[in-house]
Image 1 (cartoon, rainbow, N blue to C red):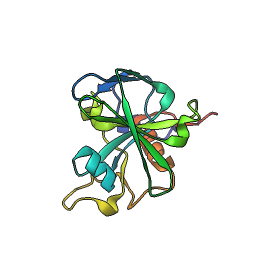
Image 2: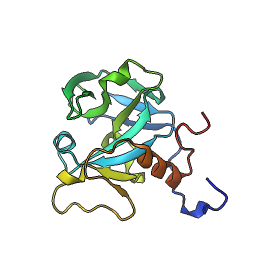
Image 3: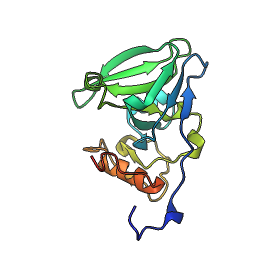
Image 4: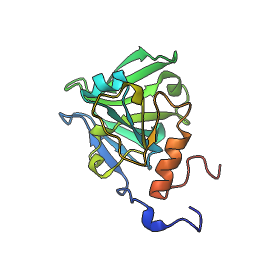
Length: 176
């Protein structure tokens, strides 16, 4: 944060660790570092997965997550040619996490997404922006001032920057 920024514009985040889990409670997780960003995704896959107009994705460093309980996994190809791994509770079917397959090969630097609706404190959070708005459902309103993308952003830098600025967090990778 620069000396010219007004700290009154900051939106405090809940204290760490953050917790969440599946609907039946068999899987619980803990996030031990602040997320890189939170965004709404309006792609048809997230609409199907969430059974709603969009899904919330909380991007975190995989190393900040600890999980208890049993997970099941399936994968699907993405439009970009990657493979997406999805993890869910085998008892109730709640999707909890997704991650590109290539990130599993590099756990130290890997990022992943937590499905935002599974987070216990989700009501206290607002996304930094929304992606895949070209496939949003009619009548879905986006709050003013949030980043908007018709499709997949080239990278998540602007979403991470907006999240960090809003909450007074250091930009990921700053000082490294």
